[in-house]
Image 1 (spheres, rainbow, N blue to C red):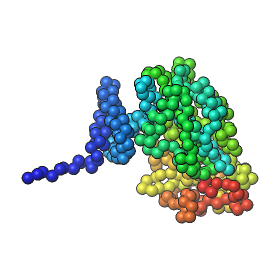
Image 2 (cartoon, rainbow, N blue to C red):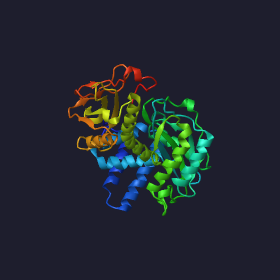
Image 3 (cartoon, rainbow, N blue to C red):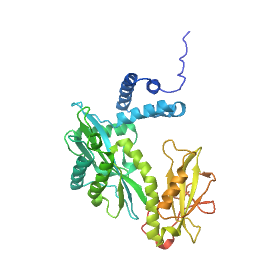
Image 4 (cartoon, rainbow, N blue to C red):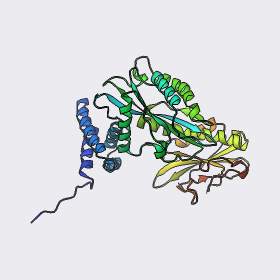
Length: 389
């Protein structure tokens, strides 16, 4: 009699189970020599799945390990990210890397996500090469200043984008993208824009300025904020901006997520002060924790001292390993006080993740402990983004 096939205990595809085995091996390794063995095999397996457009396989393996084995999850996540952002530089066999240069910006008008002119690209190339990249590194820039929703979605798409950019970087050229094919950028008071590029160098050679003996991240960041910021002024008219140090694509994106949280508060206080013609000390901030199945984020509702009506709000999402035990409320309060706000209400009740039924905007806590839609006074609401980040 024919024996029935036994299902795999994890319920995962065979390729995902292979990733679990390799990631577990790497996480449990006890030596550098063993690390190299597992890391090489894991990289080859991830490359094959990326090539076959196996996004669901990668996510299934990551989700499984996130719940069952955090160290192995971190090992697999590092492998997937590093292989996704290492663009193919064939046939030279040089090392290639997708990088991002995040720009934090705010404006009461529109924050452009736009095609970068030839002159802006040329200036960016000069200052990236001079202040951020190591000597003899080849560079290829994408000709678009991307909003978050316009970036490649998923690891497989990121891998293809990295490969395309790496090919033009081999010739020190720029990648021309048809902006009409990109999604429309969402409109927020404050948001992140990305300059994206690929760098190519000889195997084992430094890619970044701080990998050289006389370089440092601090010096590179200071020079880039000054010189790179000047290069982007014409691309972001009417915007205040702050530059984040360029880095490998996923690392830079995480740093932008972290830096955008206090930046959004600073932008909001500046916006409300000018729009409502009040000093920061005349504003009140109400901070509340918002939960789904677990704590997901804090939301800050802003009011004036003369009214309980919420006029503006900011979302402070939890990142990485942050949870109920993190000192996030203290971080938020410190940021608010640095902005000049002294009237701060910290609510400890459990709020659900509520959104406006009409426009989908988050609901923010007020001083009465109830959530409300953020609404500017009618006489000051002209030309202001409807959704405020």
